[in-house]
Length: 71
Image 1 (tube, helix red, strand yellow):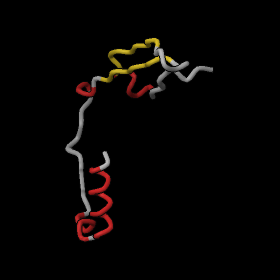
Image 2 (image 1 turned 30 degrees about the horizontal axis):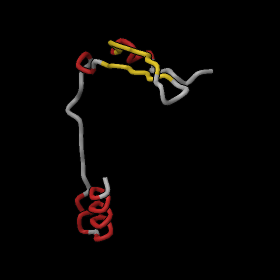
Image 3 (image 1 turned 45 degrees about the vertical axis):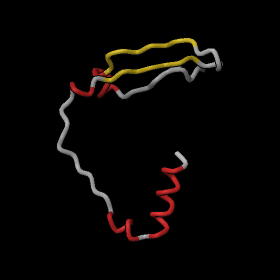
Image 4 (image 1 turned 180 degrees about the vertical axis):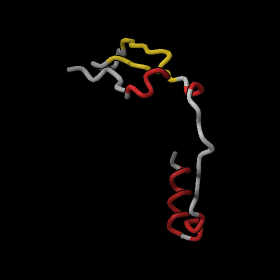
């Protein structure tokens, strides 16, 4: 069984516009790509919420700064 493949649910299969398989010289697997056209499906307003109480936590701030400095 090969793992050089994408599995997508049937409900979004109509969004797949391009697939490609290319040899990848540094591995025993191939390079696979899947392009989805997300403009074909309606999207809602969405909801994003950030818990700004985390900004008062010194440990959170220290770890966040360290994360971005080491990126």
